[in-house]
Amino acid sequence: MRVAVYARYSSENQREASIADQVEVCRRFIERQGWKLGQVYSDAAMSGASRFRPGYQKLLADAERRQFDVVVCEALDRLGRKLADIAELFDRLNFHGVKLYTLATGEVTALHIGMLGTMAQLYLSDLREKVWRGQLGRVRQGRVAGGKAYGYDVDPREAGLRRINEAEAETVRRIFRKFAAGESPRAIAKALNAEGVPGPDGRQWRDTTIRGQIDRGTGLLNNTLYVGRLEWNRTAYVKDPRTGKRVARIKGKDKREITEVPDLRIVDDELWNAVKRRQAAVRFEIGRDEHGNALNRAHRRKFLLSELLVCGECGGGYTIVGKDRYGCAGRRAKGTCSNTQTITRQAIEARVLHGLKEKLFAPDLVAEFVRSFQEELNASRRTAKQRQDDARRELDAIERKMAGVLKAIEDGMYSPVLKERMQALEARKAEVTTTLNAAAEVAPIELHPNLAELYRRKVSELELALNDDSIKAEASDILRSLIDKVVLSPAADAPNGLKAELHGDLASILSMCESGSRKQKLSGAGAPESQLSVVAGRGFEPLTFRL
Image 1 (cartoon, rainbow, N blue to C red):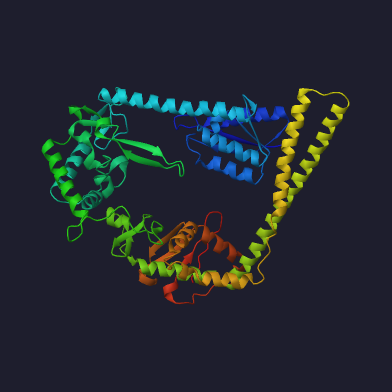
Image 2: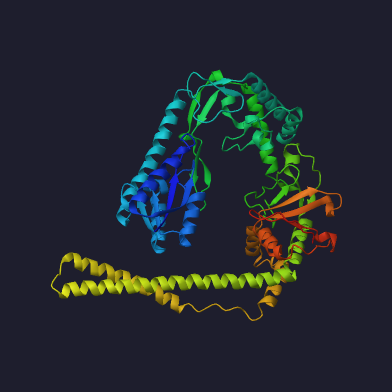
């Protein structure tokens, strides 16, 4: 029996040795069963409330590939604390013929999933309520329930107490005065960075650090603690079950807890109110067009390379800085990057698409595509055949067991236990037979006789597909899923003064396909507008190509 072990601990306050301790007790359990320990999967300092954990997801992926026969963990709540997640895991493992064991219960059954899964989720809900209650009590006593805000130090006398940091407090007042006088958060951040004034946690200042979001009370200009008022429970964070990401939801004013803490006041009411008036005026102005009509800012256009462009100088994003023009966000927001080069959206999109199309048309790559497709097809067939063979062997074993039970009954050894055993064997036989019949009905996939020409035609239609409004969104999403990032670096000899490097799964595929022809010297021929470097992703030797 090939056995996988899963271990997890949820808090950064716990010891990292917790993983090793869990693995050790599982190893001893495995030895007692006479099994063989294989892969160990783990997630450190990650909550069981979310299934989006790297180790957990790798466990599921390897289960589908039948890398092991049994999963062992210390307790069911190590795998997750949500009943739905644990039930889904159990079903998926069952489907792939993988057993689940814990140290306390032995083999996990549907009954354990229902009972222990419910208890794990109730524990999570109870913990959430206790944390909320503890934070409420702390706030009512004038203590801060969250982290340390800029302008304050942690008071060592008692948890939650703060005291004013005079040097940082003066910077807070300076920011408030500058904004009230008409300076933008971006200009203020650049000035502070130019003077070397450290921001929160020693980081550089950003315009978003200063302005934040008014409704959520984030950002330095919206922190009511600066006027001696502690506001808590303004925002609730819930996890989207589809993505595992936290989503903020603003609560009503009647649900907020407000406590006066005059000892922590940094800004006087006059300056605070002046900032609020300017915020209101600016908010109105940026939400209107030149005719005073309200703008719909809820649906911003998402372009082909949105959020994929990265500055090669500072590592920050390349964002829209003007009408259809990309520039370094670090230079624009913080003034800390020397990269002054900008590029139009149309130019960089055309460059990436033209470069990819040229690269994908390489004869070696077409041949590699056909070869790889054939290999994948053969591997898929081998896996399917192996599963069919396993199912046939299991079916033969079930029929032998059923014959044994029937013989025992014929010999006069009938009992309720034998009846239950026969029913279980019949149910399992029906499942295996269904699996075999379904596999037999699947028609074998054959290679298209003109696959190479079909590939060339599909690639030639790439740019057309990305500009066809009826399928543009879907085609763009597929292409974006293959690209991790496009790095833009200043280069005097490059088009628009910017060198482009593409990273990601697509880049890895392209580089891997080129591995067979590395000895061939690549020439720099081609129009400069198509200049695009393709860099291998993780696990590959970095390769750069000029197209």
